[in-house]
Image (cartoon, rainbow, N blue to C red; front, side):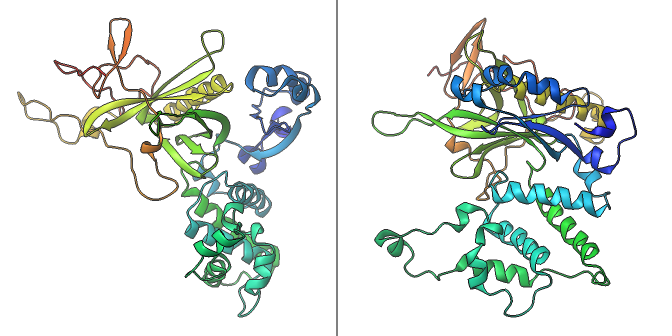
Length: 409
């Protein structure tokens, strides 16, 4: 817990940008609020694990929480840019670097190399030809690049796959990026002071990641049915929730499966008392060229925590950004008697980057609501059965309007 906030004093830069979280050996995390008392949470830790995790009873009984100092999820990126305290910048840099190296923040290879080059600058100083060598980097490559980019295969198949490619491309790409790191004029007088611009450059690069600064939760989603027997199964995911929206990340492949701003989704959750602990996300999409709304089911005992965090982030965005009048959002007013143009809802961005959505890798539900009965359709449906969504007026999420005839699936 922030000591300054806890005793009623004025919080300093570190208190505003960081907040303690409680974490267990099983990597279950709870970010503390100013009203929370770590000692009481520690006493109730086993109860929290039983309620919000799938850990075996024996593991729960033996587990002990640890209090950690981490970035405040609710601290806006724009305010990070106003921080000049070098120690606060170092703390933010160290946490961001840890998340990148652990692939908690999925990054494209080029971005990983650029970030790794800044880590080289912090550790080795300005680039000098021949220092460090590619061999020296290779020995501790996982200090600069995520582990899945450092792995090297062994044996015949690895040799065949690598035939025709240059060995050590990771080291060479890192060295090339290190060579391109720019120095700040007049910053070489003090070593510690000279690092601040590079801390800031690292954070600015991380700011490009839409899930930077998010809280992370564990869950599973259904795999799309494949093969003759239509076998599916489930895949593990991490769900990143922050001030910019919700991102579902494939824990094994290290890429984003779905990224949604709060304006693009509707959500709800079910508890174990009702059926099973699930977070439901609904969003616009298409099926064979026809606009539909899709429903994603995320299995997680942390569904209630995720739903509460989404709701709180939306409340913060509503308080920070008042609703924009429709006249200004839509441009000049229409002439009297003319009908307004049909509303166009932008599709989610899709491209090869690891930070963009891969809707084709998701198993979603398309449905139609007829009275109180929910029926699946292909590919059209009517109104949403979720009422929880951003209601600022400028949101882009809207349910697909029903047509006269629906093709039942």
